[in-house]
Length: 218
Image 1 (cartoon, rainbow, N blue to C red):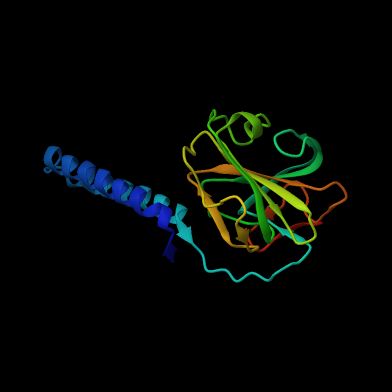
Image 2 (image 1 turned 120 degrees about the horizontal axis):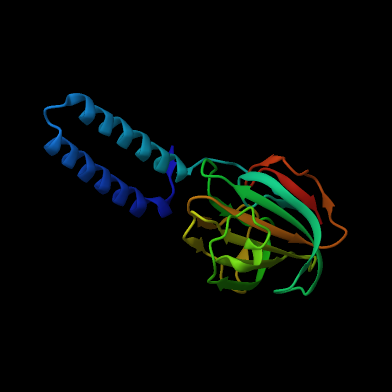
């Protein structure tokens, strides 16, 4: 299992805190092996949870010219027509993918093309399943235009636990479908806005994989 680069600092901090915790436990409970053993087991479990969160799976993705791939692992929680008011200012099809703590949290470009728009917003930390989180939470909005001049907007949204959004996008950059575009730490959500008329390929409740699952055809 590979570890994503965004996890190295967090893992080092977690390791330091757990070593400190167990050192204190040993000093105060050196005569009680059971308590010390419990602290070690708890520390091992907690570190394993953090470790798996930053895992980086090896995935080979096929190129889908008209397909929009899921930019994240998770579960589809919203499919609806809505007004996108930050960039398009018109009606779009929105698909929302919720990422739990147990999902891979790397984000990927859903289509190939040129980045037309990048904007980071500071904001609140509402629950990621809250509809208002799309407009009120900390978030990053990215728009990619494909060779047919069709644009797809996707938005990284922080949740209650997630407190850091990482994005690699730069305006006017050429990007490839399934290429890494960022990372959201500790649970969150990604919204994808598609042109009206797109053929949605998933249903609410479906589990999806970044770079693997086709969300729609545009």
